[in-house]
Amino acid sequence: MTTPPRPEGYDPRAFEPFAVTVDLAVLTVRAGRLHVLLVQRGQEPYAGAWALPGGFVLPRESAGTAARRELAEETGLPDAVVAGLHLEQLRTYTEPDRDPRMRVVSVAYTALVPDLPEPRGGGDAAEARWLPYDEVPPLAFDHDVILADARRRVGAKLEYTCLATAFCPPEFTLGELREVYETVWGVPLDRPNFRRKVLTTPGFVEPVEGPPRLTGGRGKPAALYRAGGATALHPPLLRPEGRSA
Amino acid sequence: MTTPPRPEGYDPRAFEPFAVTVDLAVLTVRAGRLHVLLVQRGQEPYAGAWALPGGFVLPRESAGTAARRELAEETGLPDAVVAGLHLEQLRTYTEPDRDPRMRVVSVAYTALVPDLPEPRGGGDAAEARWLPYDEVPPLAFDHDVILADARRRVGAKLEYTCLATAFCPPEFTLGELREVYETVWGVPLDRPNFRRKVLTTPGFVEPVEGPPRLTGGRGKPAALYRAGGATALHPPLLRPEGRSA
DNA sequence: CCTTTTATAGTCACAGTGACTCTTAAGGAG
DNA sequence: CTCCTTAAGAGTCACTGTGACTATAAAAGG
Image (cartoon, rainbow over all chains, first blue to last red; front, side, top):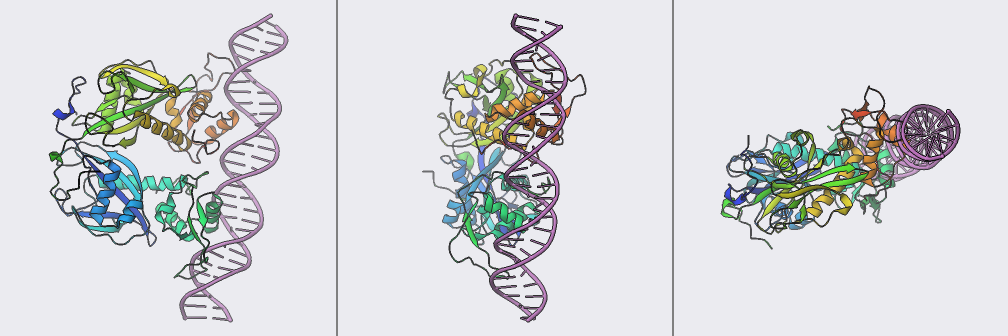
């Protein structure tokens, strides 16, 4: 199955080199649905297919730096947005034949962003678009697997971290925050109970002093909050049932 | 800070190649203390220093395969043990200067094992030994960081998974299982409460039918259990306070 | 005006847990 | 043998957090 090991005198330069790439699963909640940022590939292999944004790590870059650079290049999102977004290493994908061209190891990242302006293509990407998660077509390489892993991870992290605020604009209502949970988990949550839980967890959110209003829709205007200082949720906010959807 | 990006016409082979390695943080509980499997390096750089076991990923190997191979080579642990152990990808370390020789990206794994026979060196490792976690000297490369990350991750995973059984032999007592939690978390747990929690969580452990005894120490002999079918813990078993030790 | 919609307040019962006590079954010392 | 120590295992009680649910407040639209 593999080349026999040569423990002593092993010189990695003697072998065909590895390339290292980053891939990004950028998620957002838009109109009550989970969306993913995808790019349409402009080159072979998989030219024309949709893929996660990403690309090669440069010789003097860390993978995290490369992730932000590639995201900016391929999607044209504003620099301030790219610099400030929550980026988290997900997993590294190393199957020998995952890229038909050569041996490529890819470090995948997950990013959570509030609803953002439409991106534009750039670099290797012919086009960049937000697609609803459940309308995503088969993706290039093993990106379907990466995306599924990212979704599972984000769902789990909502339970025991304050990460949901990363999906919201700087100031948000508890209704918007609840929508994040409902969208990612795919289950409706009880409004009063959700409110109680969030407000009694120290550091999850803090009230914004200004006029307790904001709207455009009907119903009583909601108070505004911003993310608090806490990052972990103790005790966690468990999703109903053991469902992993 | 980095070489300027060259979005189009980028050929990764034109650059100095990356090497890809795996590093393993193998943890066990021995005599009530957390231990780490370390090897003493036989070659430069860091010759003579302690390091996590690991090595280069071969051209036709996945990182997971490489991890098991390197572990077997460098520690001489029995094949059956290496084949059966719980191995989990931790994180990938990509800082450009983490290895003084060349650009090396390392995929780190965490493994949890029951108390095992003393390993022996082999391959690049002059010696292999179990060292108590809090007596670990400064390690080669960025292995201190990897080890600390592994420890934090394992501590967190004990809360919401059944992973603790991976530290135990196939049949174990609830006292041994509790010792795993106490050792990794560094806090004493209430015996009856721990017992109640474990036994009422479906699929965490299942009783072994045989004679409800085993011993060598004093005290009432404990019933034996083996790991159940569950992997997740709902609801989780939270450690006292929000301590992350 | 009434209806609809959403936010916010409050109630009640129950499950899970922390803190604790008590009993049982071994080994060791005398 | 008896008594002491040690650890397993059974059981109690009070409190916290949560799920389910009801009620009120404040907006928009007919």
